[in-house]
Image (cartoon, rainbow over all chains, first blue to last red; front, side, top):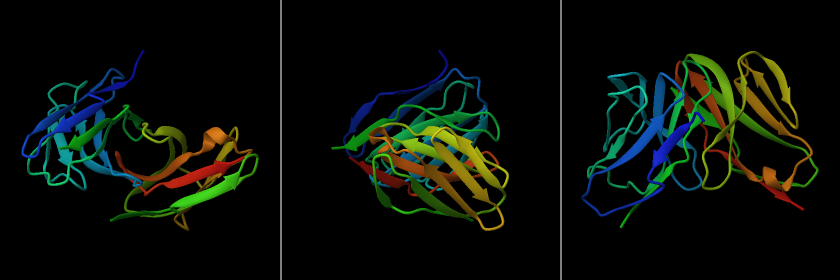
Length: 111
Length: 108
């Protein structure tokens, strides 16, 4: 079955720690995306990548970093520089100019 | 710049019709997506409009007017399972800009 997986489903972080959220897809999509969603809000774009070894900042990239070493994988690191990281994080992938398919999400809570 | 506006919340009765409006200002606009999102879950694709007009898909229809920067999602014969948030998203290149989402509550 093709799809997008994210892990873990729930993640707890202490203040000052970096954490990495995993995103893997086997849909053979070129483009991958990371979004943040706060309660009752829409999705805001953090980073996106249209091809391996290349990525661009979205609207709220500060305090986050990404890598795209393989087509299937697009991990997101939430650094200690992100002052309010508690949120629901969604990864998505797509062929160019087509619908984005979303993973199940990771809910990050800062303790 | 990108700007997507949609109402925050709507309430309707089971079996009724609800129309969710979305206005957009998107540079390099390609088309307009609608997604459904149940609480705590990932968004799922509903429709994609590129050309002006109405596209019907079962109980759900979506309309686009590019000249007016306006779209709507029409949900007919509402069911309790339709209670969810509906996200409007403008496409420009490979990027989507999402509105804040409209939470629809279906009452018996």
